Length: 71
Image 1 (tube, rainbow, N blue to C red):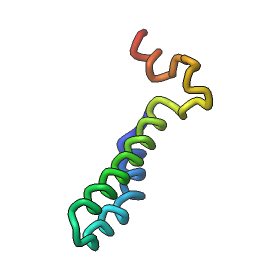
Image 2 (image 1 turned 180 degrees about the vertical axis):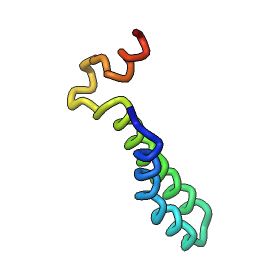
Image 3 (image 1 turned 60 degrees about the horizontal axis):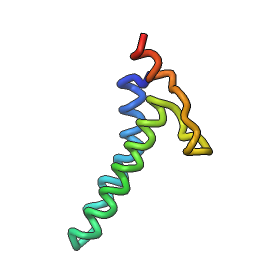
C-alpha cells in the first residue's frame, strides 16, 4: 500500500521536470512533454500501488492490492 509520503516523494522527483517545461515557446511541445511527465509519474504510482508490470503481459495474476479488497 502506498502512503502519502511515498506519493509525495515520487511527485517531488518529477517537480524539476515540470518546472523545466516553462522554457518551451510553443504549446505543442509543452503539452507533449507535460503528458510524458505525468504518464511516467502515473506508471510509478500504479506500480507501487499494485506491483510491477509482469514480463509476460498475457499472464493474469492477482495482485496483493486486488485481493485485499476482496476480503
